[in-house]
Amino acid sequence: MRFATRETASGVISRLEGVAARMGGTARVTRSGAAGVRLEGGQDKGRKGRLAVAAEIFAVAPSVLVVEVKKDAGDALDYRHFCAEELQPALRDIVWGSSDTAAPPTAATV
Image (tube, rainbow, N blue to C red):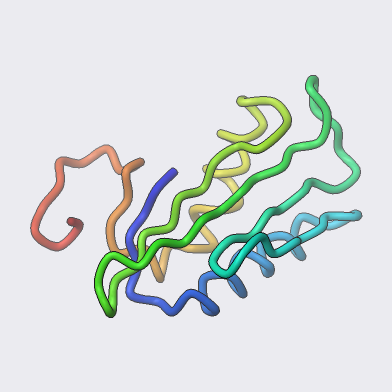
């Protein structure tokens, strides 16, 4: 999942930390580098172990960031479910444009 935002990097990271807190159990958030974060799933183990998601933040313009979220460990089906049910609803108000949208891109989403 990749999306553009006008939110600050620290704002995006705090949103991701909020998603991890709502996951419950023993979900962990670790910062990786200056502009990255890793979310590791709580108690629920999927078929391939606990889900871990890595997010990297790239500045493409002074006021525009691109956030790339990818599966770091665990099952792909669990990752897709996490993105659809947890991540996208939590980030909906800060997403400026997304690679996962079904509609064709317009000037407002690109």
